[in-house]
Image (cartoon, rainbow, N blue to C red; front, side):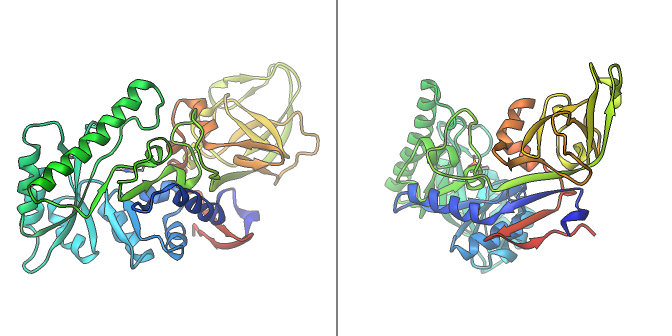
Length: 388
Ligand SMILES: *Cc1c(COP(=O)(O)O)cnc(C)c1O
């Protein structure tokens, strides 16, 4: 089938399995692994990622929205699924039907959710505590914090199973930011202690994201919400991950056309590239509509026959051009590696991110629906997404 693919992503499920094992080895006995599979499993394809994790016996999953939660339920029938983001109170029935665990973003949110719970039913919740991220949650440093947590705990239709916080700078190794993360951690556990004194108990208390797992281990956290490291990427491109994880995703395209151009000839929209000398140019069947950012125009590199080739001119919606002067044997149909390994060369999502000023997260999440994901396990293709 691959011959007719103009561009595709390969998802290495063995790398995923390996990463889970590496991460689990780092966690304390008290801490359960929670796979963050929001945003189509960071662009990797949620269905086969979740089925693989489910086979590994992973119990906890985190997603961002109710739509994601309802879909993930099909792949992890027994899983505990935590929705990390806001859900409108009108959706309570769907949450209960899907046995989904909702995050409470504020006391008002909790009250409205509770009002919408049908008789004789309960909505499972974790309370979000805002210790310094400033996004959602009860503000931990406000005077009303304890009172609000008490109000929430008294709502009859909500079963409060956990409380958690999210770090803002756990991926940064400056002394100020290390102290900031420590302060966030202390605020969470201090709040939990104060609650305990008033008889409010939580089964789950958690603070770890990927960078927390790597750089701020906390054995008391009952869950570790691992996102980016599960997919073998780094929370911070400049800091090593202290585990042997491997990238799960590779991204490929093909050459559709090869030609010689000469001094003064231009390439692509806007004429931003002019040949200085005779140059061999190949056209590649991928563009910004595939999630290969136009910001990589005249900057990015790809791999062909294990060699680096520069992008020439502006990237188009569905195609782009590269300089293949250094590859005598290049021909139409050859594979172009956009992210991944070819021979001894390698391009990572973090490399691309750095070139256009973003993070690896955005690069993989941005690979568009038009790119079929091909899932590989033990050297065999186990599933190929079909686009028609
Ligand atoms: C996305 C998210 C995570 C995972 O973050 P990574 O840096 O990818 O590990 C964890 N917790 C919350 C609340 C999130 O929104």
